[in-house]
Length: 89
Image (cartoon, rainbow, N blue to C red; front, side):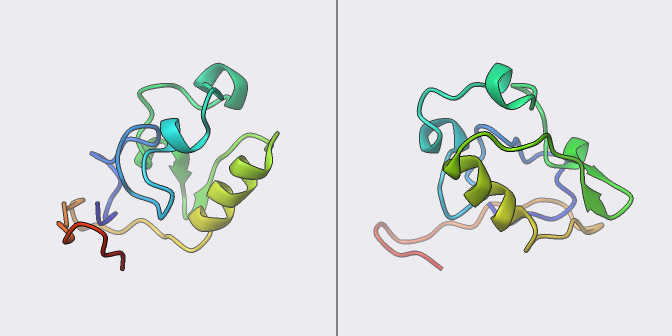
């Protein structure tokens, strides 16, 4: 998924990061462990130009938050981008 405004990009289940599904990447860490609600969108974690995220508790969470710092939400809609199997951008 190409992140735009983050309104249809779900933190846990959308494929928005280089790690794929965050649920699968964090294997066993849940929204309860991270403080990020199960149905949270990226737009809900973005406020006035900054990410509003709870403190990290694992290396995987550090990796995700580090990647998030490279993203800034825009006014464009989120979009799906299909990649050939095995190819990564």
